Length: 102
Image (tube, rainbow, N blue to C red; front, side):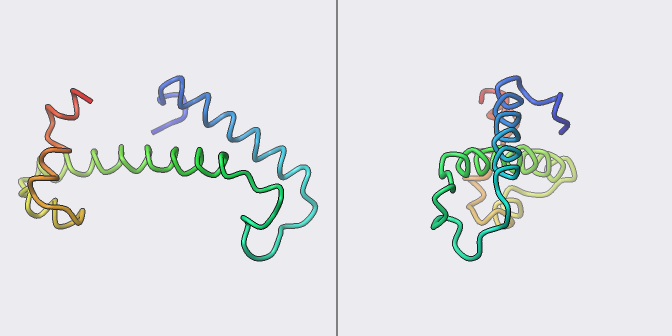
């Protein structure tokens, strides 16, 4: 999915995240060694926004692949096994009418 195809709130969140990264990179002279959480400049909120963005992108990709799998005739059992959940859990989460309600 391209940036301009994302919902406006996600575009704003990603742009804000990008500005934060740029400011951090400009202020930093050398990367810190070891655990980034020990660096006083480390921002857990920024990290959570980054991870949230990645999770939303992964969720969209999974939905797309599940739809393609179903289109090719794969069972909910096969899809559930690939995702590490039961067939029923996969069906409840990714059934087309449920995705439209979300």
